[in-house]
Length: 401
Image (cartoon, rainbow, N blue to C red; front, side, top):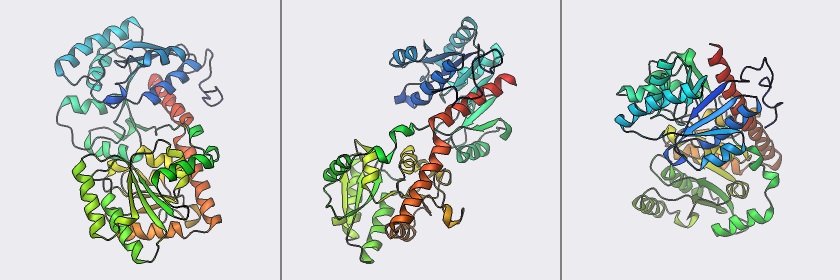
């Protein structure tokens, strides 16, 4: 990442982070760690003249960190054992002292308690990151409240920040929004060849003339597959017989997949649906689909995949839950000329069917204009550069404070 992209965090005596030692604590990816963001921020810190340490029990990160100028510190960040967490507090105090750490950023909900205790004793500023989809229920212990007790608390969306305000005694002035960063170089439709799209559609087993309504993601309650099946029945009744619906994702439980099959049979749309595994080539899947839908019934169903679809310029329909309004701009929240996709009420098949029908009926020029605006919106809010710059801003502000 260039220094121009990281302005004003340039090297030099007056640079806000130059010469500082920043420690990020992150659990392994399997335990909910955001390794991509950690590596991006580590590389940016090295570029700006800071000393970047990463404490984790993910040994696989050691080589990558060394290659980008970071330092690996082995640390059991994923433990949920109270005794181990207490031992970790002393371990972290020693790391802060021996490495002369200026600021700690903990990206782990369970390591937050350890970091809060250690940083208060060491009198070091602490930045905590809320889980990607936020905290769903009111915390019941100090172990659960710690994630919101940083001097600065990072939320991944306005929705997550709002939910944190309602669940934690966290003053809004301590909250900062840093949205996830996407490597947009991998999400460019012009780089997707016709052969890749043809291969994806062939794997789906669809005919060349059929328009695809794609729903990517795990088959699970809360994701809205039932709503889509009921919407398909309404679409079939409108005479649209060249539309196929592809559910691309593994079932959380086999019994749920059988329930979906039974519902499709009951609604008379079993021949319109195809269930496949998650695509190995998501960009080509987004290009090969006429519409991509995320009819989640709960806020947690608005996933990173919906951001990727919008970044590719797919005609994207999302239930109006969680952070959906931050991903897609849709009337009545914006003028029709600013539309980048569709927002629909959750659990309302008729509204979903109408949005799908509207997207499928667009002319070429209108369709391309929405695609272009969608890509621009995501590039502005969710680029890797934006995420990194916002994170460094949080660090500089916390150190100045």
